[in-house]
Structures are given as C-alpha cells and as structure tokens.
Image 1: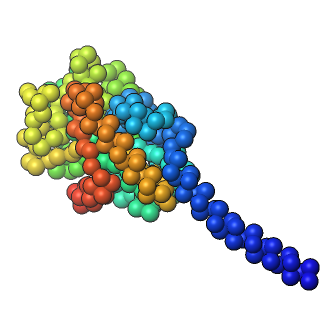
Image 2 (image 1 turned 90 degrees about the vertical axis):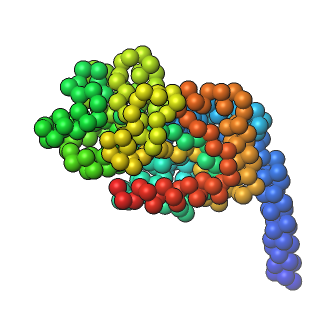
Amino acid sequence: MNQLKQRRAVIKGLAASAIVGPSMFVRAQSNWPDRPIRVIVPFPPGNTIDIAVRLLQTGMSARLGQPIIVENVVGAGGRIGTAATVKAKPDGYTIGAVQSGTIIVQPHTTKNLGYDVTKDLARVALSVRNFNVLVTNNNVPFKTLPELISWAKANPGKLTYGSNGEGGFPHLWFEDLAKRAGITFTHIPYKGATQIATDLISGQIMAAGDGVSAMTPFIKANQLTLLNVTNLTRVSQYPNVPTVSETVPNFVANGDFGFAAPANTPSEIIKKLNAAINGAVESPEVVERLPGLGLVGIAQSQSILKRSLRENIRVLVRL
C-alpha cells in the first residue's frame, strides 16, 4: 500500500513538472531579455567586425531594453571566439559576431575546428558588408599593383604580407590574387588590425590586406599607402584608387559581417534579435556613419544570411 502511494506521488510529481517545466520555459522566453546580452567578438578591438558591432551596440540596446556587452575573445584567427559562442548556453543571452573568414573560409581550410558551423550555430542576422583594401608601407619599392607584381616576380618569396590570421579571409584572397598574378610571397599572420598596421608602418612587413574600416584611420593619417580596393568597381570614398580587378580581371573580395547564436536558441528569441539588429542597422545615426567606414548596411532576415553564406561558399571554396 505504501509502495502504491509512493508510486502515485512520483507520478503526480512528474506530471506537475511536465506542466510547470514547459510553462516556465515559455514564460522565460516571453520575458526575454531581462538581463544584459553578451556579444562575443572573435577579434581584437579595432578590427572591422569589432567596429561594426560597436557601431550597432547602442541601437541594439535601445531596441532590446537591456545593455549589450561586447567581449573580445581573440586568437587562432577567430576560432577561439567562435568556439565560445558555440559552447554558450542557447538562451539568447550570449550571441557571437561572425564574418566570412570564420564561418565560410575556415571550415574549408582548417581541420579539426572543434565545431560545425552549419550545425552548431543558428544564423541571426546579416548586418553589414565591406570591401577589403591592399595597403603598403609608405617606403616600399612599388606604388601600384602592377609594380608590386613585377617586383614580386623579380624577388620570389621576398614580398611580406600580413593578415589577421592563417586561413582567414584577407589571407586567402591575397593567395588567390598571387596565384592568378603568378607571384609568391611570405605570409605573416597577426591577431588583429592594430598589430598589422603597427608592423606595416614600421617596415616589419611590406604589404597587408584587411577590411577598409580597420585600415581607414592609418590611411587618412598618411601612415600607410592605399594601393587597391577589392570591390569590383571603384568606391566613392576613394574614387582615385584602382580596384584589384583593373589588374587582375574580375577579382572581387568583399566580406560579410553578421550575428549568430548557439544552436537550439529558441526561434522567437532569434526573431527578436534579428529585429533589433535590423533596426539598429537602419537607424539614422548608423546609416550616416556607415559610408565613412567603408561599410554597407544590410537589414534582412536570418534566411538572407544563410543564402549569402551559401553564395560566398561557392565563390571561396576554389581558394
């Protein structure tokens, strides 16, 4: 008899938990967010993706009603920060900034990443797009891309080129350029744009590639020479600067930046995040600042991010 009562008590307890558990979960979602949201940026301050996130930070916070805390988790060409996003609790309180290099290039170039970007990350929003730039030390023996190519052919392997990590997007697009131009070079990987610029200015390396927004302060200060842009056509902020495609036909290398959440983050939370990010991208203060940073705002659904990634994979997989 006592065993029967105990069994009934257990069954009632399980039934109660089955009712209360989901209702508490639904209530937690409906109350989201009720505390600050952390955004993991996988590169150091001053990198293009860091600039983009901080530009949207205030607008996102205003629309979500909670502080947005930006945390730079750097290393391994962005893999450490991306892994931190993957491992975070899927409750909407930790999301990650993502870009072409970390979620398109690296899965095709790096073995044993430790995560699968197609399964372990939920796409949230595609926020901005930018073109890359090829910059040089002011005192190098070439002033144009054709001159760089000629010098590199005459001095095999002596051209030193810096980027934000082995297998990252700026590394691979220059690999593609070098292959198509028939030159060789020595790649020097860095953690971020500031380190690249420091060594480039001091003459430790000869050339580098990165997002235009990361290099703009050094270009405007005349500390670096802007050789080319990787957009298919010339850009309004630097109308006199030639594109790479003017020397290497049809060459283009633009980067996409967006946000992702750990897999299994509730879809309703992702929709709210998407709306907040899109609202921030379209806000007057952000729209006004984007062109000066070499960025184009893209306020779209998470499905557009997925489609953009698929298109970029087709372009980049040949690298």
